[in-house]
Amino acid sequence: MPSIFSRIVAGEIPCHKIAETDAYLAFLDINPRVEGHTLVIPKKEVSYIFDLEDELLAGLMVFAKRVAKAIETAVPCARIGVAVIGLEVPHAHIHLVPLNTMADLSFERPPMRFSHEQLAATAQRIQEAYQQG
Image (cartoon, rainbow, N blue to C red; front, top):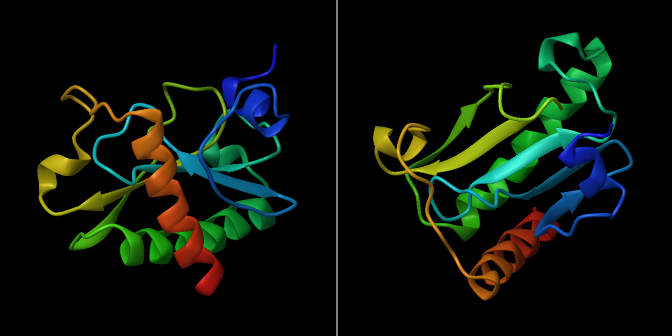
């Protein structure tokens, strides 16, 4: 059975898309730690990030870097935190989280809730920064 992320890639499940290439996709997390929390995935479904082929992993990181710069431009923050946990969805992914404090990267606290309109507005700001970058 395809992962939820593969279903997003296939267009079966909607997302607030940030950026996309032939091999990668970035979209807002629907259970964000903070505003702008973004997931970056390879379109190829591989469960564990360190099972990705070297070229695919390297490309994922380069893509994530450009997305992180766009988030940093669009969402006020001190830095962009990076987390790879890999237990919640069996599809390799990177969390990019705008940070102002260490607590912003805590996955132990409840996620924030944003309306569809708020998520769409955040995604648009990040998309615009990505396109300019």
